[in-house]
Image (cartoon, rainbow, N blue to C red; front, top):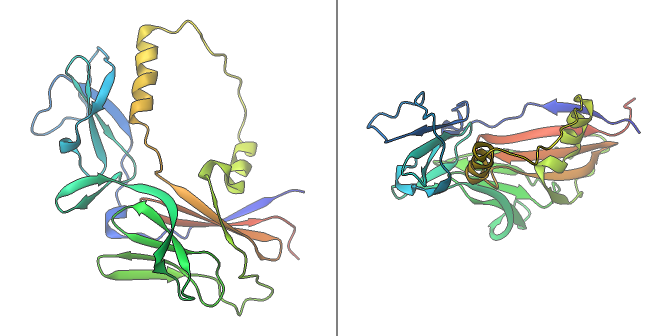
Length: 238
């Protein structure tokens, strides 16, 4: 059965979620007061750990074996400020008995972040997905007045890579075969190690509500920049 995808660009933007910075990594011999992101050493050294006191909202600094530093800037915020300290954002979802929905049910919330996001276990009884930040709250859901909606569909936690929408995009992309070179150079081995050390987990998460509309599912993807909604149409619509 052919699946088609319509994507609603429902992205909730809150003050701290507006920055878009091209990610990259730069190695320097020392960190000046004003970091020059264009500086890059010809040599490369394995990363041994993060220097947490040098964090800012979008940047992590890592120290290498030779004493040099690598500064990595991410496209989305990776830290939130809490009592003067920058802490890791963790968008993995957990069920919270403390944060209740409009139907007084437990909701899914991210483990750590600047904004409180609440995702209901289903969309019935006026329950909505909400996002709160600095005293302001935005909420959205599906109206029961829509024809043939099924609001009792239970939310299912799913890895972002496993979403149907991502599967469709992958299927439409051209495939290329990659031959692994087992005889990697020392530099390539270090680069792979450093890439692993600077790749962050739980930057995004997702939930799905199946068959909310006839032949269509809802996907919600949570990231540090907001929430995106996809409508996945499984059958042809009349």
